[in-house]
Length: 161
Length: 287
Image 1 (cartoon, rainbow over the protein chains, first blue to last red):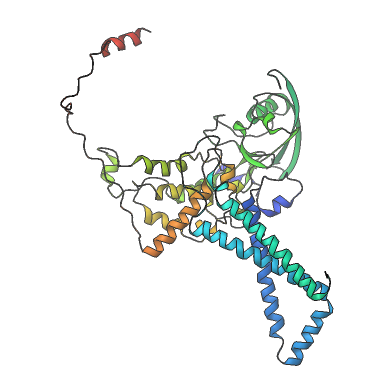
Image 2: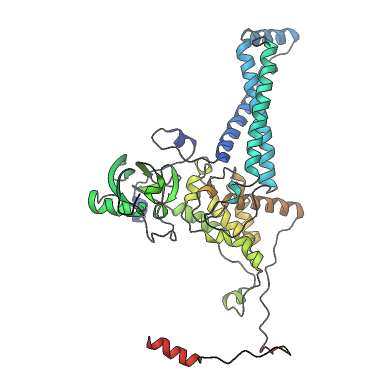
């Protein structure tokens, strides 16, 4: 065992937990890093919703049990609609951003071509076509989310024109 | 700010003592002049305020890649960061994340270099004899060189690996540096080691673990675009799988030079030299 290995080293992990820690200054995050975090969170939300959905509907073995489950859910109408609204937003973002990621990661689209670096060294992948596409994804998600929210809450009668 | 003016700036440095296993933030007040980099501040602190601060730097001009730290939340090279350009009265300095900290601002790069070695960052050729005792250079067009040269500017400073969000999830992830180096040799027309590198890169901890957060490219001090390289590497692997290509033929050795060149008929001969080479050499030696 060398002397170097005897030193007790501090594991200094990066990632989300470090960035949420108020002790550290806020790192300069790229828009793509935010998109990655959001993509992962929405993906987790969708998968857990799907599991819960299968579990709930799997319990309905007869028309009576189905209607009893539905009536339990309908007692918290406001909560149910909000959950559906969040799910809609998550699905739209995850789907649209997924298309963007397929274009960028599998087809190598929108990240420029390797070239000789020229000062002031602004990398192509940070400012080529995939960045405006990310803003388009965010804009479309917001529009779809707001429209979906209006339709959902109108159905419940929580908002009316 | 004029040339001689001095501004007092507080440096908040994250420290770690391996003997006591204790971490803490320490503040130093340093008078900063225009043009002072963080390395100059290290030296000021060590000379005047606290000799126990452990730092690492070597060339102080962005070539050696050993002074990477997180400055005000952004992984940067200490030698290339001018303090007054940051524009803050308090400058936070901490060791690079995703690496084990040895002491204060010094981190352990062993794993990082290990990953770099894994992708075999050297030219692999089947004609070993020619490679060991070269007769002439391997053929490479200027545009092929321009396509690949960006990734060969890497100085292994490790900032990209510190900015990447993936090592927090998967500590065995090869990282932007190693993957970009693998790509650099895979697109090199002279290289024949495609099969060996695909084995390393096309794996669980290889290029499929990248999620395109693009933070590596944003912090690279050399203008390299590792994120771009990794995406193009993935495209390359997908097209290789679809087309069934597994090997690559390296470019051939350049043909030997013609023994002598004859002037074209009708072209005038150059004027005689005004200074003979031997005389020019004598003049240089005299001076």
